[in-house]
Amino acid sequence: MSGPGEKLWGWKAIAARLGIAENTAIAYSRLCEDPLPVRMQRGSPWCHERYLDEWLARRSGGVMRDGSALERLDGWPAICHELFGADRATAFRWARLPHDRLPVIGIGGRQPWAYKAAIRDWKNRGDLPFQAHERADAEVFATSAAKRRANKARSPRRLRHKQH
Image (cartoon, rainbow, N blue to C red; front, side):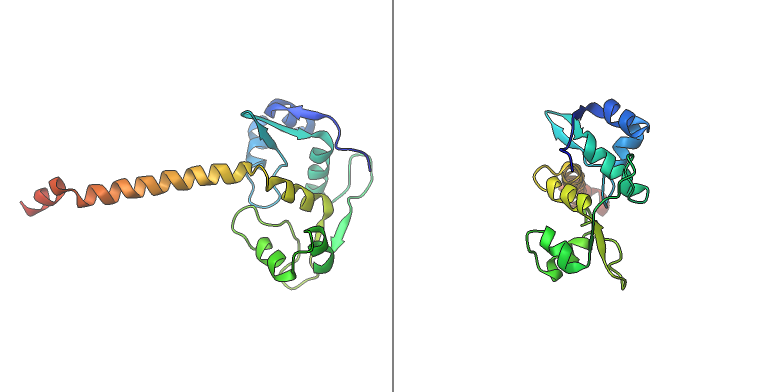
């Protein structure tokens, strides 16, 4: 397998490589499961060409543009080994997370499997979680808005107004 290839910088270059619109690329980067493997550096998105090609292949049946197949990990033992030896219960919990879950297919009764490249991308997101930053910002905004509403409901002015 060759290296990750050239870095593509900016949504325009990433979208052009995938043959999609910029807004679609941004939306794909926000998916809950197996999002576009984009990293952020100084406010600008970037990704390696090969990682984009592998992501596109995962979305379209596991065949790369050059006709080669992506490597699969079949079963929990192989998946756990790729996750630095995590136990099955931990891997299963990560696969059930509500956001940025481990990209395992067939966890509900069938033999589970995952693409090795998808697991690699999932692990790489751990050091710079683009989606997690956006989610945290949204949660902070929602929490602060809820606190403002609660404080407003308890304010003396509001209580005096209700007594009249």
